[in-house]
Length: 285
Ligand SMILES: Cc1cc2nc3c(=O)[nH]c(=O)nc-3n(C[C@H](O)[C@H](O)[C@H](O)COP(=O)(O)OP(=O)(O)OC[C@H]3O[C@@H](n4cnc5c(N)ncnc54)[C@H](O)[C@@H]3O)c2cc1C
Ligand code: FES
Image (cartoon, rainbow, N blue to C red):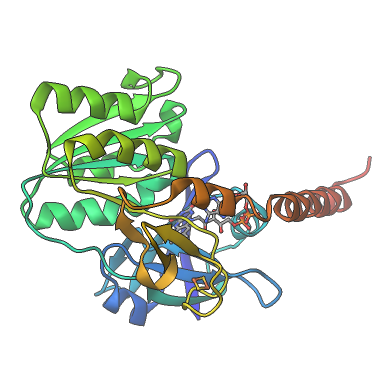
């Protein structure tokens, strides 16, 4: 069990949760995640450990509320006890490579942060490219600036940084400055696919962290399987990081849509229940 110590809204739909969870905080390494179950009738969901403090015994999760469980999580109050299993997944392979471009899109910035931090600690030159639809959705800017040597921001609407996509910024960076030694990209599958397509002809080693659907998170159910070249891998135990040039992104995106109807229905029912509860609690004049 883990105890929620604090929660803070950091952007629309994004909440930072700090949990007291000493055994996980002690063992955590960059790139790992936890499976979270917020109550006995809930669904287990995978969430990256965005930060940890071994001395304080705490882990930090940064979560975008996109569906029933992540919306229900927003209702937790400090003191709440939830089930957290981990740390899971293979840690990031951290080494000194030279210049490492860290690309984060939307909620992908949360898992990117601990990896960028670890790569910076390994004495790499970190160039971070962070993107979002609008300025307020480019999250964790202060944290990423603290572990980066150079920052490039992009927004779809031009409200912050340059207008356009992270791939436009990466393309210009390669054209102006030549090949970096490594690219790490985390964000929507479509973003990672296009980053990998851009780096492939330049033969730039490219690591992506995959957000496949997970059920048990222990390699037993096969729910998170992905195509990697001619092989099939399980994201929960073999990943979540993989060679971006080998990932079958089209299959990943297809599998991510498997339960869309059920997810939509669960979210609709959850929102309806909450509207009803809010109306029951409202004063009648
Ligand atoms: C290893 C790993 C680490 C993750 N780390 C984080 C994190 O640090 N912060 C964070 O906000 N999210 C993270 N995710 C995604 C998170 O697990 C999902 O957003 C969550 O399971 C959605 O649950 P839900 O019940 O709220 O929504 P659902 O009803 O399950 O889904 C709502 C919508 O989100 C989409 N969705 C569902 N699961 C995923 C997924 N795995 N990836 C992308 N879209 C999805 C669905 O297609 C649907 O459109 C991670 C996923 C993985 C596999
Ligand atoms: S989530 Fe079940 S095998 Fe990975």
